[in-house]
Image (cartoon, rainbow, N blue to C red; front, side, top):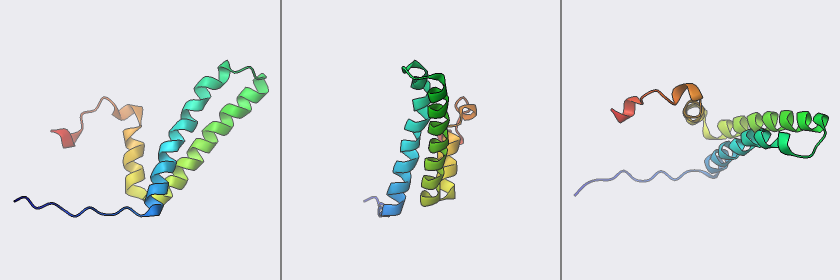
Length: 91
């Protein structure tokens, strides 16, 4: 019989932090659609800037909640420089 490790129950703070980090992706994607909206140029600039600032704030609030290690792994995963590298864990 194989022994399994007991599941570690994630705290509510951890779950909220992860949902904030995941939802920050939405705020990063929004600026790509704003130029196609019927808004004035000034409103487009304000909207894009606000969305990017909000994305960073939401990510870092979530990162504080989940911890430095988890946030670092997520940040590294979404960095385009690391997409072509082979992962050492897969070898």
